[in-house]
Length: 283
Image (cartoon, rainbow, N blue to C red):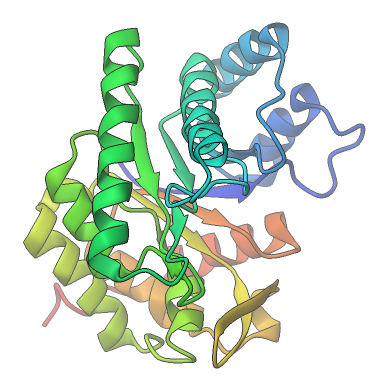
């Protein structure tokens, strides 16, 4: 991508009536770059709406991503739940692709009491199958398991990097709020943010930093990880130094704001990012 783009997680709150034909022009008025389609309760966008979203987003030069339904577990013990999870990811990818989208993300799995290596193998097999189907259908879109907010969920930074090395069309979605929450308050300094970008750049290459997909919100957490999203100023996430790290590493791609006040915090982060000086390149 040519720059770092700021997106809302779903339609801006002020969209009224809440229709895509109102939401997309509203994003332009706000000075934002696009939207993550929220399919969290099911992929229900009808074909006519898909065509309209593609037309409008193309005309307005907006970037689209999509979040697959929450009811996904590629380590589900029951076969119907496992196959339904794969179907939900496939449906999300297909619809996002038709809409002209760039990337999809999802919470991939729960450990369910199993060891990390066993679950990793299951997730890898599932993602390989998903990518195989999409390639046969000509659906070219990034498939991104999300860095999750609880230790009971598969998807820490190392797991995401490893699976991105081993499965084509797969790259991480780095949720910095989840990273902060799942470590009970760590990963919240400028140096730690830089370590994330350094690790991804070193292990996946500069291409991964130029095609980035991030989630950011304020976050409430406890010893077991994420509790709920907050507005940035209500949380302890050091979003200012995070924006500085994004700029210093010249990261390009998308930041999706998941705060409750989605458009306000997206604009807020965009402003901080634009005003941040470049420390690393000047040193």
